Amino acid sequence: METTLITDLTYVDVPPVPVALPSLSPTMLTSRLKRGLVAGLFKLAEARLLFRFLRTPARVKRAIKGVEELKRTYYGDLKVQKIARVAGRYYREYQTPGWPSAAYDAYVATTVNRLVPFRGDAETLNLVFLAITKKCPLACDHCFEWDALNQKETLTREHIRDMVAEFQARHVSQIFFSGGEPMLRVNDLVAVVAAARPGTDFWVITSGFNFTRENAGRLRRAGFMGVTISLDHHEPARHNAFRGSPQAYQNAMQAAIYAHEVGLVVNLSLCATREFTTEANLLAYARLARQLGVTFIQILEPRAVGHYAGRAVDLSPAQIALLEDFYVQLNFGPDYLDWPMVQYYGYHQRRIGCSGAADRFLYVDTDGDLHACPFCQKKAGSALCGSLDDSLQAIKTGGCHAFAQAGM
Image 1 (spheres, rainbow, N blue to C red):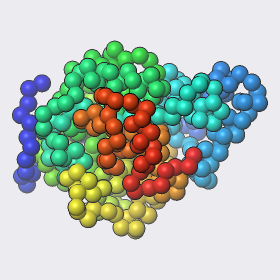
Image 2 (tube, rainbow, N blue to C red):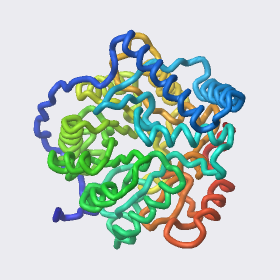
Image 3 (cartoon, rainbow, N blue to C red):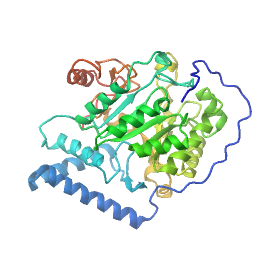
Image 4 (cartoon, rainbow, N blue to C red):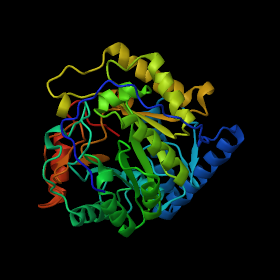
């Protein structure tokens, strides 16, 4: 798609075009009986995988004990109840592949291998964020790739294909393509994922730009499983201002609708700024997500990197407590079983540390350089040249800038 790439777009305060939003069918399982049945099927499937991987009852018992300890460490006394169904798969967490699938099996295998080694390697990566383009038509207030935005591209389609193959060889079960705006390279996305081998779920992280009904179908047919759509306010004018475009809200809404139509899992990603983070805004945002049949809401805290570098953007302790309460309420409260699931990684980082830094996930920037995560940008090698093993080890050694490394 030919487009003018705007590097300095200023929001103009004009009346927004009304966005007529449908009420889309929910993906959450509302029946207690059905949730219980599917939860039982998850346990049965996992037990079969354990016996397939480990072969002896003693090793299986050891793995089960380890998995239960991981759950207690991660969730404490909270009990996961919510389950969503999209295109024949069931989902319980945003950063876990849907079941049944080869990607889910790969995810379980890596988790089990950490506890009871069985496959002769020490690979631990589950998830990679892969930024594939510097180009973007927006001027987002919080952009962490701001310094690279709309510069000359580094990554070719062959680079992207080779990196995907390398990470798949390391048992990575989820790859999220970001940018810039990755939908500007939709032809490359379709070609790369269509040629990838089974065992990895692919997602695209987008503002909604160029996410047409046709392109949504192309992604789904190529093998994509989900889309993360950046939406930073439930009010159109405020989202448009944050994104630097009078069309940003409309694009995000249409992307959610088209993704739902073709059977992609939909996640709305919110940068919870100081200005946004109130109880009223959080509930209004969740209500909108529920209307759109969204499966997940991801909450990101603003960090002083990229366009935010040098700015005081950290949330107050009271706002962090509000986000934590929202996370617990929507995920585990009995009155919200048909609302989207909430992913708020900060909740767990403050309790058990960070699982990034090439332990369970890492970030590859638009030059192919490796970082602990999108918000801990400190180059430690390249995915395009040199020893990837050495680079991953350097990231693990450096760890996360803001949090201790997770001890799990």
